[in-house]
Amino acid sequence: MAINDPADKEALLENDRKYVWHHMTPHNDNPMIVASGDGSWVTDVDGNRYLDGMSGLWCVNVGHGRKEIAEAAAQQMMTLAYATMVQAHIPSIELAAKLNAWLEGEYRIFFSNSGSDANEVAFKIARQYFHQKGKPAKHKFISRHRAYHGNSMGALGATGQAQRKLKYEPLGVGFSHVAPPYCYRCPFGQTKDNCSLQCAEAIEQAIAWEGPDSVAGVILEPVITGGGMLVPHEGYLPAVARICEKYDVLLIVDEVICGFGRSGRKFGHHNYGVKPDIVTMAKGLTSAYSPLSATAVSAELYEVFKSGGDTSHFRHVNTFGGNPVSCAVALANLRVLEDEGLIARSAVIGEAFAARLARLREHPNVGDMRIFGSAMGIELVEDRDTKEPAKPERVAAIVAACKSKGLLIGKNGDTVPGFANILTLSPPLSSTDDDVDFIVKTLLEVFSVGSISSKG
Ligand code: PMP
Image (cartoon, rainbow, N blue to C red):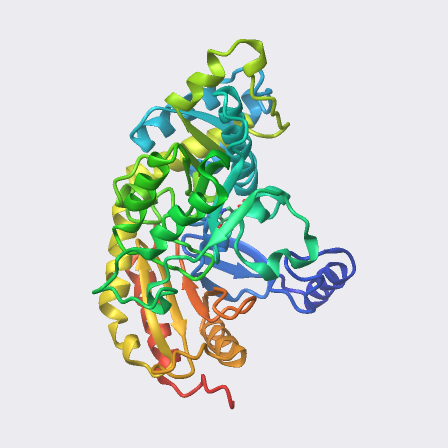
């Protein structure tokens, strides 16, 4: 819905400048006011259309404007808008059963509101689990530098990006970080051909140095997404799973972005044949049509909470978690993903990127391209030999050039701490062939027209 009278837009902007605290920045003098969405496209109040190449914040997996999801929400609101999760309600029961089928294992599902919440719940459950097993000293978590796990004090503690944390410390305690699996700039000086998975060994060393009796869990995304699309060696996750097993440390897999088809499988960890103890999820669970997250806990872990009598309860409640409307939205969203074959579609989109953007790999400012399902990272450098990260002006110029042609992309990563030199794309899994053509054509144009020089 476009605004016809420019005065109306000016009034909106004035109130935005006056009253709205934008995320990540105190104000935005000229924000894009998004008015509507349809499929992979969003329209601003001036009527300009953009392909939403990041699905918002990696979350609108089924695309915008889904009537079947809106109808499921309306129906549920009229039937029962709210019940607590101390009670039971039909949509949460159906959704928990459905998630078990998707996870291909037996899990108990604890519902919350956001990805950060889901990770906080995972940490608390892991700590309480070891209390009840008679090992209360096991309370620490190992994470990786570059990882993002959320904005609350514990989830930010798990996050491995210093610039997001510096002004808010001290955070939740007990989190330490090891080098990430970053094959393009291997922290251990190895290459794909001589890789001996030292990045996985680093986790074993951290557990040993911290003391296995003090470590409760390892948290990781199957692929570090927001930290720059770091796709690990295929042996990494299985190696970490073996290490966790060896030291009685829980494997917590954060599927907030990688889940719900983004990876080309139902969950990112399905690509690596591991069975996590805890899986956290949000974003694509509802395709962001309504806030909802979940912490899936293996049946073995749950048994310790169930069989321990009154003192073994997990003392955690949140008002909105498992809201019936959000659960109904999630069920409708999962139906769309299944009925339209969007998980397979995600893999097809990624294959199209790999094949049709191959030329980009030769560009002097492209150091590396990494694809996982339909998510892609393009690491920009000043010099392919030295791998000097691209300067902020160059990255900003490319993002702006894409936007001017109607393509919204992201920039992520922390190669130089706090600075993003990795372009990211993560379009809706429902993107049509025409949408994919548009993304490919726009990127090829932006990279081959000399509009990306940092010298202007
Ligand atoms: N984990 C990962 C991997 C994420 O990318 C995010 C959000 N970008 C979160 C957790 C936190 O999710 P939320 O913003 O819903 O709290």
